[in-house]
Image (tube, rainbow, N blue to C red; front, top):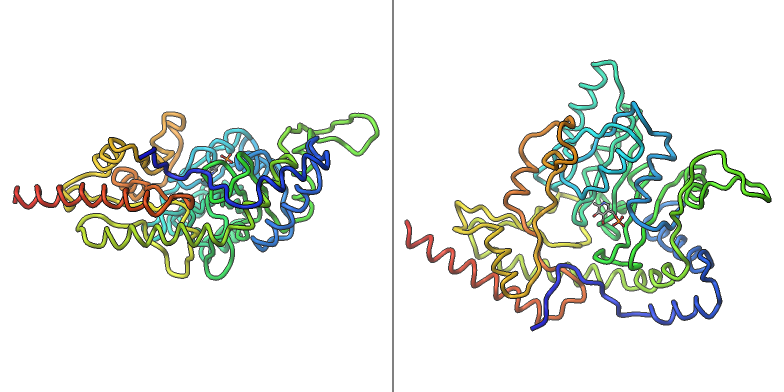
Length: 384
Ligand SMILES: Cc1ncc(COP(=O)(O)O)c(C=O)c1O
């Protein structure tokens, strides 16, 4: 069997047609009507007023901070369990990232620890300028608690919804919780533009500023006039055309990934010491990646042993994001931790979850996991 990937691109709709239409219309240089439409469609899907198509989710996170004027001297709180761009953009603007641990119920920013850090910072006479919340692995953070906390401390709330398009929490949609939010259309995401992202906001002035900054910050003049530093960050019309076709099948993608998750769940329910990433109350994830934790004491095996076993059979699985406070890049950064992210990292694994995975491929992965866990259980029983 050929390699089974963690989350391969799934091209199944009108991608070719829409890209061809964009090429034939000559809107290739690089903005155009497909981008305008894609922005409107994503804004509507996420329940926000404005969307700005960008070259990556990282660019969207970066502009979220730049448009808020965040820079040197500012403190930005970041969940430690995330992919590095969430933290990198804080450094891009010269601000200080402070890492906060995550909660066990959703693996996202812990609201109690966030409250502690906001209060502790205020007591020192300082102020947190922004809070980044991440909707990890397609599940929204605890915004019922996080939104009022950020607001009461006058901190900008940036929602990193890179992985969570289509997820909801308390009936609201991923991308609509932050003052500004970022989506990613990177190749492994639930929909892709091959590479791309979007900044979402209800604030007209933020959207307009981001649009300007993303196109070299040209001032309105017939000549090239620049009063602030700009970037070349816009998503191209061709890629937006591709993204529009992907978006049309978002609901099917969520359904497929959810059914893959349920198949893993029914298998893993039979084994002690192997648990699924939890789904918080009121949360409807998009099931982007199915993640598990393996407790070696109970399961008789480890996440790493399972990963190696799958790899030996040409199946890709991946460790959970390594927490930011353990990255050499952020050595010495301040952090408020309770050990949750460390434990998730030490015991966690992301399983193949792509919506393009065939039933036969899924069966193959399930059977490989089953065999590995069965063997571990038997040899553990032999030892006791
Ligand atoms: C949590 C998170 N934040 C940010 C990003 C950055 O998105 P991009 O790769 O589009 O720059 C990603 C995905 O790659 C991500 O998973």
